[in-house]
Image (cartoon, rainbow, N blue to C red; front, side, top):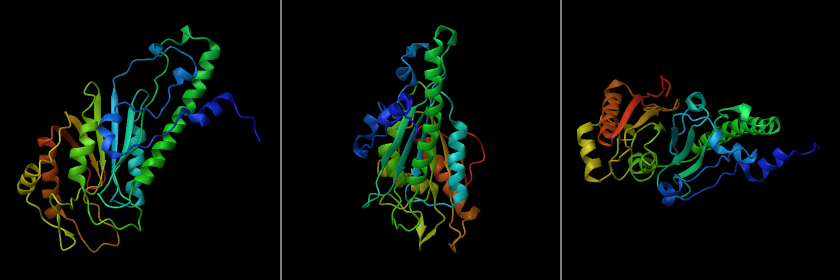
Length: 285
């Protein structure tokens, strides 16, 4: 067996621990949580020597009642990895209906380190320790992000009759996204965006119906389910997705009102809907 290095021991002993928290505490705890331990601490380098970058926080909220095809799932991973840069924070949330074995949870949340601003001021030994840690941190984050996104989707054999998108946005997701207004906040919302709850249902006879956006917004307002995202950027991936085995067809007649509803919802919820991927997200975040 290969000899374990000091860095490997540090990693295995909890450098990058993931802590599970219950959904009732999410808005409070998520703002303090960092599952990515600092390489500055490990290398014993003063954190104030880090490069200063514009703050960005990416929230990836995956609808746990949604199980798209492999190409849609791969696209989620690609968009997230393309976005992430040193200094960014990422939070992965799985949200679902309020039924047994399906619940909303923050799966992962942490901020990546930036490089040292002036490397000439740091000893060669400390730099080597720091660089090794940073390489491991990058790989750790990629692995954790991929694992948690993969596990956030609904298993193919699971039957979840309800889809509580609006309630989760209002009560769980928006309060977290709104916390730190000093940095750019981006929400990647991965869902077919078809609500089916006590607030309202976009289905009729198990098929997506042609909704009346204004009437649906009134239902949301009456239920006090609008959110406040504090001008965060919203990107939707997966809207209107239909399984290959489904006989249903979602053409423009049903998709345009669906898009209009969510445009009105996010506008009323103090957010910027940058793109509504039907189902593919074409632009970068």
